[in-house]
Length: 224
Length: 324
Image 1 (cartoon, one colour):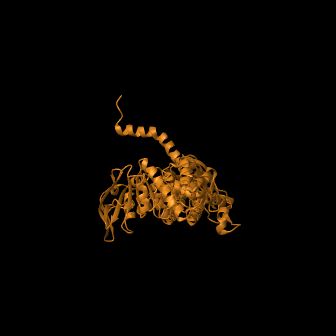
Image 2: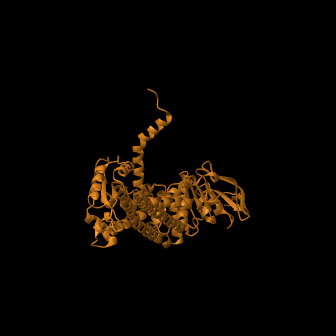
Image 3: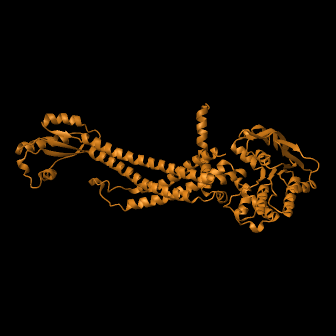
């Protein structure tokens, strides 16, 4: 579905990483770790074509992302659910409408009702559905972001530090949701520093752990 | 039967599909106007651009009503001046006294009576002559003491009137008679009225252009103010046309409503203008609409909405192309 082949990215004369290859196949589960500034968020952005690789090739469902027009990129993004580190909400819309946004822009808002109720209950935001994003706590925002990422049942789920602001119990619930989606054939890629989350996940799924360090992507050791 | 040439067949095919295509486009337009409230809410209301668009389109529509009224009124004036002057002529006979004058008038009337295209010919009475000269020479004019030419008013009723032929015959039968068919001063009057009409239409074009420019600026300001909203919409898979549509619909409706209010205000102002008989020369006070002409301003809100649609769509798609 999403393939990176010899991909590199640099800006301002600095190379962030280079010659990086990986593939997100249906049913795959990946964690991406690495020190801050290693390029985890940039790598995710390459996967949903918000950035263009400066070397190598990113392929989205068989098409070169660099050669895709804006409409094609938009249609590809509808198949990718993204949990952004900074959540990226529309602050003038209530939480429920923010969660439904991917369906709304795709003209599929009629499909949202039942999914929305179940998702809100699952992420524990039923009572907050009518509130505006600025009124939510950091944890509530991340849960809402995850709900928005999965509302369309996308083929690929990319999450950038999805448990950074939430407690352990909620992290487990979100992980359980991602694992269930993965068992339905969705590819999942989570960028995280949270080793406990990785260990918890590995107890339930065959997750690959990739470490981005010194501009290279490595397979993590068995200790994870 | 020979088959139709390919281009002709294509044109006929297009014409055959035209009604269905028209219905389809009509449905699309209605759907566009109805909009998708939920999708539209994705773009937050933008206070000052909303007010600016409403105010601009209202003011421009108000001005457009007057420009339209000017164009239509001068059009009517040019037409009437042209017709009235083309339907009349004046024959001037040299001053004469007593029987000579009567003989001269009788000869002139006989010639006119026999001339094709002349409907009626009538010698002006002494009182009518006096009334004509009164503005320059004052009342109680002793007309009989002055060498005043005798005037004959001629009404033309046919296109077969031959002014040159009549002049030649008059030269032979009524020496000294001068035929004035008003050509010399009719043409500049008609040209002047035509130019005023053209100025009215030019004003309408300028108003439409200014409206489009101002709405474009307002739309660009709204797009710039909503850069973060646009970014989020793109991240969740919105196409440029989907984002543009939310802005375009909003600006189209605002411009349409603003122009409707401005048009109604303009029509009311025209209605309240003092009325005057245009034929008496007071065409400026007679500025306005007549009969079905009152329906013409109703096109202005539609045109304003169309202008806003085109301007906002172009601005939105251009801006979205340049925003990464």
